[in-house]
Structure formats: structure tokens, C-alpha cells
Length: 175
Image (cartoon, rainbow, N blue to C red):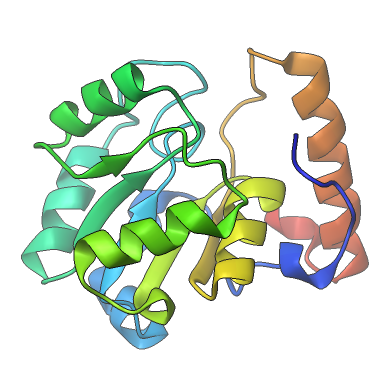
């Protein structure tokens, strides 16, 4: 269970509505050579085995620009592998234990880049964003599309804390 203390390592450096809104030019401007993507509520609904509209094309466009893409997720290996295949066989790290730094560093090492050149795109402040900040990666927050089904009450509580934190930092409109 992630530490839920509200500290500045929860603050994303960049905000976007959806992953498909981020362009290769955005990544270049951030100094990213690669991007790690979360699964749940970033490229697919919580627990789903199908992608949000436009994600396949976004991955292809991002890769065509020379930016490597890897899945970095806390989900189980079989689901990560399935989602990887839907996206053309992307490399993936399942059971990443975000926000622990180990998974982020493993992704950077696998892609042959420095951790500061890895952008992390995710919807959760307590795992994706905190982990990216703590590891030294580039934290990018996207809005979640619907409340989580699995662990509904747990995630409802975390989403309230996220909202309270972002409001306190002047970013209340970002969720």
C-alpha cells in the first residue's frame, strides 16, 4: 500500500487530459527520449483488456518520432503481456511496485537511457507521479476517465486526497 502522505513529490511537472493529447514534440521539449505508460485509467479502463480509442495510433506516432515506449504497471504479468501485444509487442514491466524507484530504473536501463530522460505518464499521484519524482523521471499526469471498479472504496479515498492536494497547490482543475 502506497504511503499517502501529502508532499511535493506528488506534484506532476506536466498535466494533460489524456495520453493521446501528448505529442512527440511535447516529449522532446521535456527532454524525454522514452516514455513509460501506465495501464489502468491511462491507456485502458481499470481492469479492462481493451485500449482507449486512439492509443494504438498514439504509440505508433510516438515511436515513429524516435521516442521509445514501455509499459510500466503494477498490474499482473498476464494482463501486461496482453496489453503489450495489443500495442505491437511493447516492452513491459509488470508488478512494478510503483511508487518504488526500482521499476522506473529498470525501465530506463532496459531502454538504454538515463532516468532523467524517461517520462512517466499515469493517472495516480500516489504511484505514477510520486514514483517518477522520487526516481528522477519526468512526471506527467493524465486525468482518469472513470472511477476504479476494483478496490472502489480504497481508490475513492485516494482520489479525494489527490483532489485535496492538487487544490492546495493551485491545480484543482486538473482532475
